Length: 196
Image 1 (cartoon, rainbow, N blue to C red):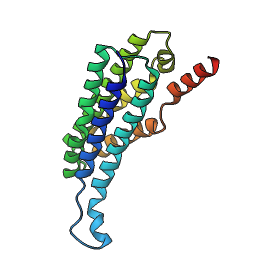
Image 2: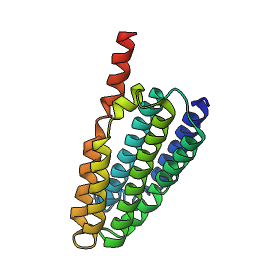
Image 3: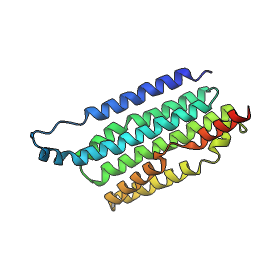
Image 4: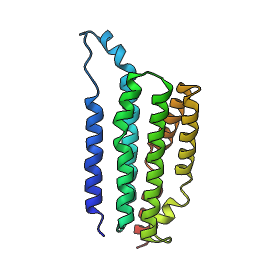
């Protein structure tokens, strides 16, 4: 099955997710720069969530570029990923309204955890379609970075009930790990193109 529709649909959903998040940013009541001070936590939450959505979009693009085709299982795995990404605006808004409260930060981490699991599952479905010797399979390998991220999210969720700021710091840490696009796929495709 061709991958074009999957890419186009995913790009559209991700664009809507970013639009919903930016609509949550409300202008302050005052006219001076002091009025912006109250919006700093909201803005920082927005930045973190925007970075996460951007990371998923970027790596999703690279991964689908490496895939030659998609299966029905990959279509469902992709929808599973998009479902969890679509919840990011909601959990971001709840976290904004309840600054550094345990439950919103735990739920935020839960959505990030489920998105990471869904992305890992999508990668495995694409590899199953492409084959174990494909450029995508070799590039992803055992995906240690993805598995480490899942563990850090789980620790962050547990930690959010004891020290919510530390949990947020762990979520930022994972974003930092992934901020530079995953070059494994790009490198593997470039190497394969050079040899061809």
